[in-house]
Image (cartoon, rainbow, N blue to C red):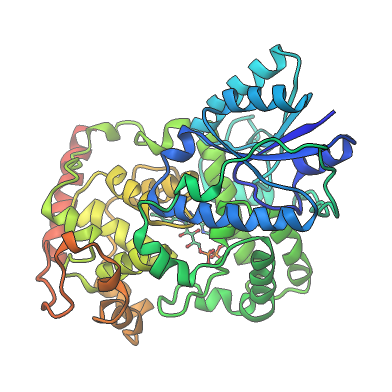
Length: 463
Ligand code: FAD
């Protein structure tokens, strides 16, 4: 009897518990990706990156004698139809703990089980499941450092080997054509610009990991904050689409960790931030909608997303060099350096006093490594209303940050230059010219800082 493997953020063969279990069941395995409303709602860059990931994974499946079946519709309807068409008696998937997915998956599991289908979810995208990491009193960690202390010495399940072949059905069910989904429709710039720099797929993820271990991890501590070189592993886009599992990375780092290689512990700690973000989202499903800290609903954020200064922020036109460089980097490449994310987010939420959700949504539209949990946590952390957040009164000064982390000016020069690729990428309707002089600051750093601190003082006075 056939097994349907419903793929989501797990587009890989290696360390894929649901796929391994499906292969072990002995029946034919039917890998399926469903374009449902959850996927339709994603931003332009994530959908564009997903399109590439699906095309690549279809080739990978082809290489092991299998196929990727694509279907459009609400997940339960599609799965029910496929069960009927293929006679499958099992549907397996990797857990996705975002709030929307949890509700959807719970309903799917219940309905399939009621109709006699074995529906099972498997560990997939985290090092530790949220219910396996608890404080001494049985609660969830709300601060990262004790969370890290609790998990750093733990065993992580060794990665499962990829199946050499996937048992195939006698007759494949019909599949949509990926081109017809047109996932890159809102990302015209992507084809020309982002696409040229993008790395996709499981083999590429493994190669990136090996290159990082051999060349970069030892200098991770020293280089990761430098804006001009990336300095990080650059694995986030692969992790976001599940082209590599965090357990694979964790285990690959262990030999270096035990040899005391510099950078190994710091890197794993960063990887654990990703788990922390997902655990937070699991325990506080509204973290991408509501201020996480109590009382912050009264903070005087400006919620008007159409204000000229917000538009200027999105378009890299605030007149603050480092912020504009960061926003242009993201628009052109779909990536943004971690420190640049913090600085750009801080300028929006503090100097421009803007509601963090406006920035979060723009990042969601522009990042090819968009991860709902890391993005929400990152924004709330910077804005001061999140778990383990930087205190609101600690306002990043982009100029001081530039002196420290872009001392040569190379990062700013690259992204502010007329030939950075930005002007070729932006839509005509933005009306930007590479020959125009740099704009004056929409809000100067001293004014913005003073305004942010005054807002915080008045808020604190009431709370
Ligand atoms: P490395 O430094 O090599 O770290 C290894 C891995 O650890 C990363 O690939 C990532 O999976 C994880 N990681 C590292 N830092 C963090 C962190 N602060 N929070 C959670 N996980 C982390 N990361 C995303 O993957 N997707 C997002 O949508 C996202 N949005 C962010 C928004 C804001 C406002 C901020 C401040 C941070 C955001 N981050 C996000 C976290 C971080 O910026 C990226 O994970 C990092 O830049 C990726 O580069 P890297 O792979 O070289 O990271």
